Length: 467
Image 1 (tube, helix red, strand yellow):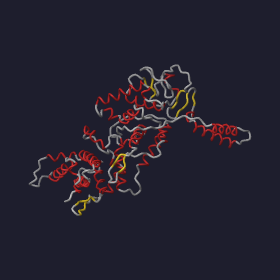
Image 2 (spheres, one colour; image 1 turned 45 degrees about the vertical axis):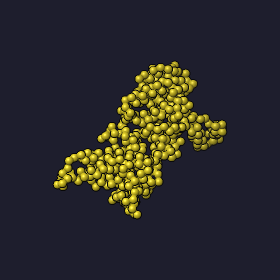
Image 3 (tube, helix red, strand yellow; image 1 turned 90 degrees about the vertical axis):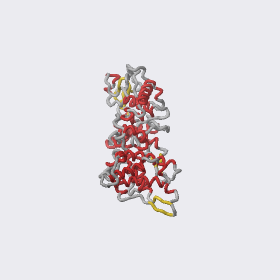
């Protein structure tokens, strides 16, 4: 998930009351249910219908306990009209803002009203406002903004100032400091929560607003990736799912540990539905084409918290960074290996020009190497990947700036993949004797350097020149 600027407006879950027509039917149903003429079976059936209709119309009244009602997003919430001794304490359902650093801030749903810290002094879903840490401020800001859809975080100076302080500290530490590396989904969401143009929602509403899970990437006519109009929305959904379903989304977290959200059962159920929607959207068709596989692979790469396209950011982490850490444990890996088995770039020569006949297959061989699919001990596999990249560059026009930019990204990733091989290019080899056991690998290292350490613009366009 990356820094985006596209504004996203999303709705918020509203509490609605039954319509007049529905209320009339409720009363009629209850009257019939308890009528002396109604049989017990009819009575039970009507009661169930009324209960179900009431629940659908008023989800916040699932359970009432004294001055509290159960809300599917916030857990047990004190009734707005309840008389508390500490009205200045902030709770999700209230409009009152904290007044000083000693106030309590809600950081997760309250699952048991008897643990309400306002009444009994227990910490439960609250933490002291003084010295709020990064993880706490993210959770508090999220719940507060979902509870107050008409407000921005600036309307709560206490939370806003703490959030601004943490974000400023991260920037001062490093462009991509330790906190961002280890708490990236939280960091991503907090930056969004700071923007008045971003309106967070509950997971249930988010699922309702997402009939189809958006894609990060689509392919242009030549098979190269371009961002979709929904890329920013996909980033937001991915961040939500990383915070709600860390186990299932673990494969996309290439930065490290982070702190997931604690949610109500209803919110978890909605998050699970959203995850299922995501998994359904990234499935390959029954008989996928090479281009189908390329699109799925690029969408997965863009989902990673440290996407392959931001390779410059990862230079400081040489030896740790991999474009797709979990690649070899996926069905995608097995599918690609089946497709590229025995395949090579195929060029034809006609009237003075070369043409790459199997561009998509050559592209897939390169992408497999970028994702870590090449066995570093197999010199034949390495040579094929290097040759494929060389031939792919040759087929791209020298004035196609967008595609050249993408080739530069692929080349940087290949330099990471074959970093050990490139170091051999500096070794002194006895080429004349032909007896040096490192001869074959050193020759391959020289070939790798000629392709991976040479400017891409020197490699492109060769097939468009008369030979």
